[in-house]
Length: 109
Image (cartoon, rainbow, N blue to C red; front, side):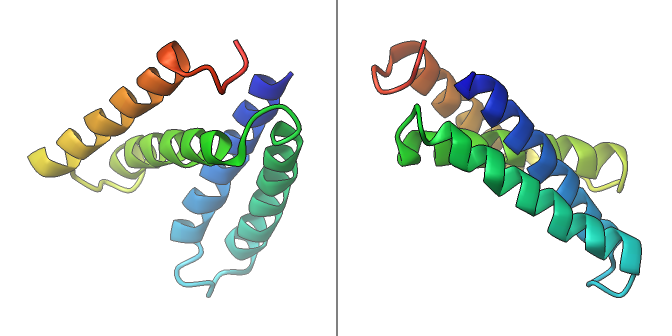
């Protein structure tokens, strides 16, 4: 269950952050409301995940996966390009998530 909770938290964080971009600095009502709702749901499910995993690991996975998904959405939907240093940084985030999942004893397997 903790990974399901974390996946839901990441999904809603990604929705909320995408809506933040669409809200145009909170000048549009519906995307602004989606930001608040999305982050609220995300934090709730992240809190549920904390019953099973340490906060540092949960936050690292939540934020790292969110960054990756937002980068993809930024490229696909908002036309935001990434240069080589940005892509390198994203690859390092992926590597960090892989190390945590494959080698850390602090996560639930």
